[in-house]
Image (cartoon, rainbow, N blue to C red; front, side, top):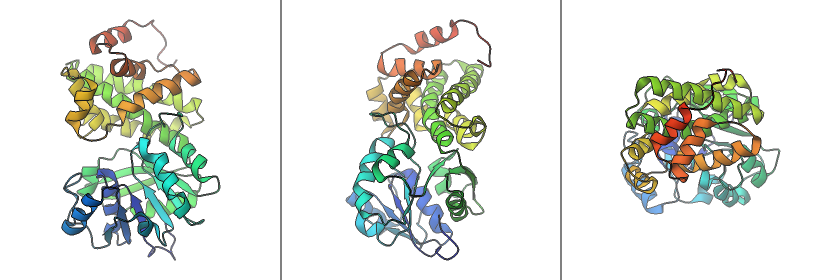
Length: 340
C-alpha cells in the first residue's frame, strides 16, 4: 500500500466495526500513521477517549499511538494516498459513492468487504469500477482471519489480491509483522468469490452441527462446499488453484468450524428453532451469510452453476424449508461422480 518513500503517509481505514478496528490496529502496530473512521460519532468519541473499541473489539486495546480515531470523513481522507474500506457488503456502494468526490486521483483503494451485492449480483471490485471508474489501483483482503485474534496479536495469515502486483506487495509489507503474514495474488475474482460463498456454507455448518449431525457431515459439507465454490469461481473467471489457498479452503474451514464465526452461530441459532429474524437479533451484529445466501442463489442461477448446499441454505432461510428436510433432499439427490 505504501512505497519506501511514502510509508510515513497516513493510511485511512473506513469502518470501525470489529474487522476495521483490527486492521487499523495492525497497521498502527508497525508505526504506520493510521486514521480510523466510523459513521457513529458517539461511538467514535468514546473510542477516542478510551483508546479502545469496547463495543466491537475489546481485545484490541489500548490502541497503538500511531492510531488516530477520526470522526470526520473528509478529515480522515485528507492527504491520504492509501485507503482501506471495511464495511458490510450492503453498505459498500453507498460509502464508495460518498467518498468518490473526496478521493485524489492517486488514491489507492483496498477493501475487506465480502459478498455479492444483493441488488446487482456484482462482486465488490465490479461495484468499485462502476462507482469510481477504471484506472485506480485496487485490492481485496481476504482469508482465514477472526478480528478478535488479529486484535489480540495472535499469529495470522491472509491473502491480498490485486491486478497491480506492486500495490498488493506494498500492502502486504505494511500489514506484515511478527504476528501477521500477508500473501499476494492477482486473482481478485477468486479471492472475492471465496469470501462470498464461505459465509453461506458456514451458516449450513452451524445448522448441521446444531442438529447434531456430527463430524462426518461437517467434513462432507466443507469438502462439497469447496467444490461448489470452485465451480462458481471458475464460471466467473477465477483460477481454480486460488480456492485451495487461504482465501478459499482456509477461510471456509475457519468459518465452518469455529464459533467466533457469526455465520456459524447464526446457523446454530436456526437449528435451535429460532426464526432468521430471532437468530439475527440474538447475534446482534451483521451476519453476512444471510443476505449472501439470497445473492448467491441469484448469481448461481444466472450463470447456470449447480450449488446444492448453498441452495439448501437459501431454502431454509427464505422458503421456510425445515433444516432436516433440506438435508434429506441433499442426501437423496441422484448419484454422480465426485469430480462433476
